[in-house]
Image 1 (cartoon, one colour):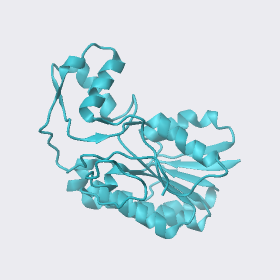
Image 2 (cartoon, helix red, strand yellow; image 1 turned 180 degrees about the vertical axis):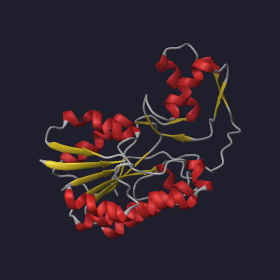
Image 3 (spheres, helix red, strand yellow; image 1 turned 90 degrees about the vertical axis):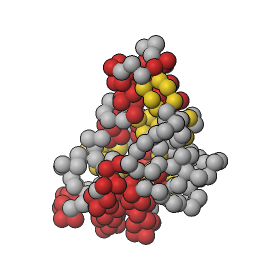
Image 4 (tube, helix red, strand yellow; image 1 turned 45 degrees about the horizontal axis):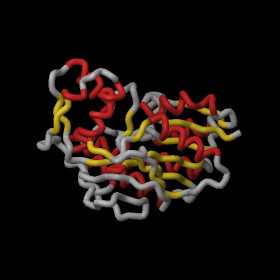
Length: 261
């Protein structure tokens, strides 16, 4: 039986991994929140792994505030780069396979046909740069790892685009949503299932992988889909906002294609 540690388990992906745990009886899970295990604390990591034997570590811990990262770059790099480096070193020391969740924001969004794992990276904001640095540390430290890049992760709970739009549909008369960015919305449950199936697969492929939802759409089109799924009859409240404003620049076309590097 493989022993699986999930870090950052309080987030939406961690919560869906926890919900799926019973469907994978050959895996023994330990879930820790960022408060229970801080990946930026080298002593805490070493103490934890000395006491708790682990075969696989799924790292969902991350600084994910894209706009906030522009203002607090040091904090973003502390979690997404330095913390990942420390975790990778601990995995090396304790012979653990690391499964790390990364992002489409490691690309600049200028490639119209979308991105494969082997494509050149070029982040255009601090968040993407910090996540890419974390990837680089893993690739330099470990041989057996999976860096799984995903995009636009959402679920019906927690803080994400789906819940934000659902709330606005109920409370606001008009919702402006950008039609300038295109990607593949990915349900957290689907990503969680992909990760656990990868762990159970004895013929698993290591390296960089992409996993994203099946549909390519803009945020505006995604908001329309959410309104239809909610069945509220509020689809007409959503209008295109072509003057999307955010503190951090975002890639215009960050479509991920699901090939392995």
